[in-house]
Amino acid sequence: MNSLTASGAIATGRVRLVDIRQRSLLTARLRVLLLVGAFCLIALAALLRIAWLGLVQPPPHEQSMAEALLPSRGEITDRNGVPLARAFPAYALWYDPQALNDGGSALVKPASEVAAELTRIFPDLDPAETTRRLTSGKAGYIRRRILPEDANRVQAIGELALELPRETDRQYPQGSMAAHVLGYVAADGHGRVGMEQVLDEHLTDPATRGTPAALSIDTRVQGALEDELRRGMLAVNAAGAAGIVLDVDTGEVLALASLPEFDPNRIDARGQSLMFNRVTNQVYELGSTFKPLTVAAAIDSGVVTDLAKLYPAARPLQVGGFRIRDSHIIGQYINAPQALIHSSNIVTAQIADALGPDRLKRTMEDLGMNERPYIELPARGFPIWHKGKWPRLRAMTVSYGHGIAVTPLHLASAYATMVNGGIWRPTTLRKVAPGEAPRGRRVFKASTSARMNQLLRMIAVYGTGRHADAPGFRIGGKTGSAEKPGVGGYRRTSLITTFAAAFPMDKPRYVVVAMMDEPKGTAASSYQRTAAWNAAPVVGRLIPRIGPLLGILPDTSRDIDLTDLKPLVGDEETEE
Image 1: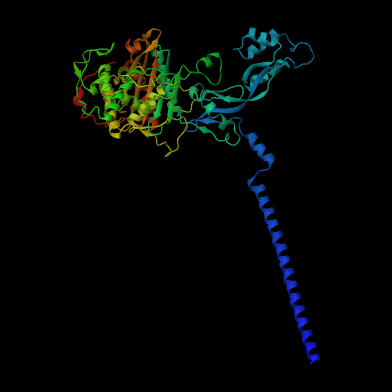
Image 2 (image 1 turned 45 degrees about the vertical axis):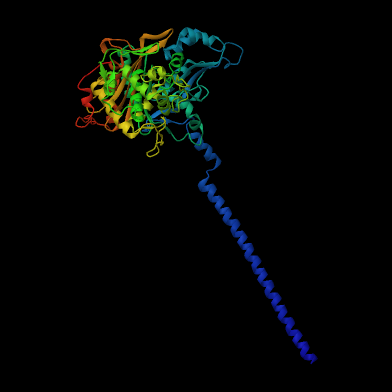
């Protein structure tokens, strides 16, 4: 019995020993697997890091090299990629009186002789002024933007004090074109005045300056606008001119010009004096161009339902101590379409009176007339606007464009709203991608917009806008001639003349506004000073130039249907 017990105990011990060995072996294997797994993870992490460094993140020296290859300031282009502003390396001519550092004269040759040699290289330098600068003992630029061949000629003079540092220069390849849109870059490297200032961060940030900033401007349209405005301004000896071409569905500005212009390549005292932007920063009483907006508000509110209704027009309208007159007697009684065609203050004021001050003011607010114009440019004029409750007389004078002063951009935006189906949108100088136009806000019913398109076309066919009518382009629009305010009242000899237009009126796509500041009566305008004779012809010449560029070809076989309105106006023609 004892021997059996002993043999069993021995067998049990052997089994336990085997179990312990097996568990130890299993534990060892698990530890080996864990170590192998850990090493595999470390190796994988190392491989991923190597891949990141080698394939995704460039080495530091490559990063700095890539950044060094970027221009110091990004490029600005038009909507089609045409460069409007770009940076490039250039030489400058710098005078350093301490160059010799020997306590003697800074120059080897006499200053007058050095100045004469510099004048032979740069004929526009003043020898006396250059001599004075060379003897002043003060360091500074003598000239910026030097061609390499001129730099070589300066070096040949042999004066160590004439240094030629390499600098990055800002160039505007189109010269003065769109100067008020672009602005310029100051000596501190930052933009001023225009989109150079607005886009300053984008243009200087290494992360974005390699990508050109595309504007909404079309250089072809911009060039045509500036050319026709300049031609019109010179023809009537105007003090200035302004204009804008606006996409009615997106709010994009295709062209914006203020004349006289400045050259951003050469900023001097005269250039500084011409930087004021007449389109966005100057407010004017824009006269009769407001009449269609008043009629649109009256139609939209249901105040005008019958366009055949007649209004007395033979006598001035007496409102308190104020008399509202027309420039000439139009007729005993006329209807609303005739009031627009003949540009009647008397009838427009009566329509505004029926509409009421509150509703007219609300419409003007919906059109943004009580705020600075909506555009990216930093210089935006604040309207002359009566904030409180409008009295009866103010509403009546505002109806025909007096008692309220806004920018031409306000007017262009309002006309775009009136013709595009009634939707107000902010204007922009940034290129808008297809389908990304802002939704805007509704101001007029679509039916009101359709009716106003007919009426604007009638003005160009029968009324004061006839000199803007170009065959096949179905232009519609309204003239406005307003006296400029001065000391003691309005100055009868100083006018602001405007023509606000849209085309083609059967499906409006663009608004065009042209303005003349203080035009004179000349042979070119048949010795007339009103908008019908100076601003309207500018638009009449411009649209045939830009229409085909914008995909609108002349077509004399189609037009907006005026069948229901023509009996109301007959075949009369008028001039403002």
